Length: 228
Image 1 (cartoon, one colour):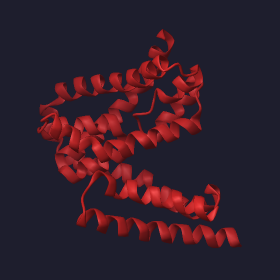
Image 2 (cartoon, rainbow, N blue to C red; image 1 turned 90 degrees about the vertical axis):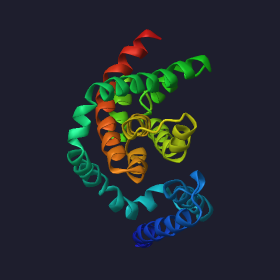
Image 3 (cartoon, rainbow, N blue to C red; image 1 turned 135 degrees about the vertical axis):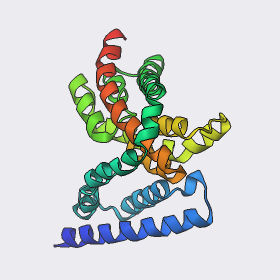
């Protein structure tokens, strides 16, 4: 009964905390006050300090997790609204997604190889830039650690949402299609949520990039791993 109570408290606390961090971000916008980052850090610290097991927390938080599927499906709405512009830039989008997907796999695998990491770790980091269910499936197929790839996926998503817009500004990338493509290919669903804040076209292209890059990476990972 205690675990159930803690689980219910967890979901209520998580929702309240996210709303509070949104207010903080509104008052003090910064990569480090981004709600997805700040709320995650606070929750992790609270679990560590209170010594509450992760599975107990997830007894309540899993209900939030269940909404992930419908939320991803809802990304089809901006995609449909911007269909005309997406068709207009179809070739650059496809080429850009392929280049981004290829670089995402290469930076993870070759970087890990140069650092002298074990083979299983290289296999675990290869699919870091795609959404979690696809990344886990790919990693399981190539023999990596599925728990570890989930961490890499989270880091890629949150870091892309935190620093993606700043990097784009630094590189003077201003076209909404290019911005959405970059964020969606590198940072999947979490990045797409940030891209939607930039504009509907950015969000639509980011959602499309997230989907297509997942398909491309599922082919690229086994090929690249077989070459190294």
